[in-house]
Length: 95
Image 1: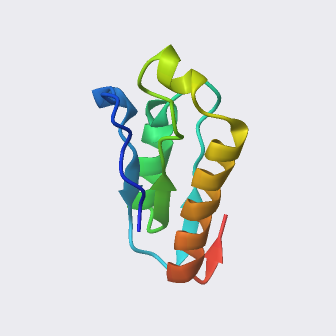
Image 2: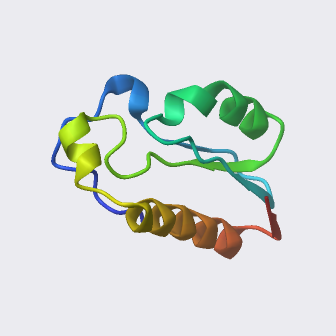
């Protein structure tokens, strides 16, 4: 189960991407102050190649600086860990 989105308006270009249905999963994580947009092309190509892909939007990112300022590395780590665990539950191998 994915956590609800932030109450803050998320930019259209910052939406997460989940795709593919293969038994090998790939977790993409964008950088600090970035958004899924920076990795979207790679994530789509990877899904099209037959892999299950997760490209979450890290908490606070893709909104505004005030929202980002209310988050910490623990929030970002927890998001990445949730997505990793979701892939592990669905895949034989995860990268």
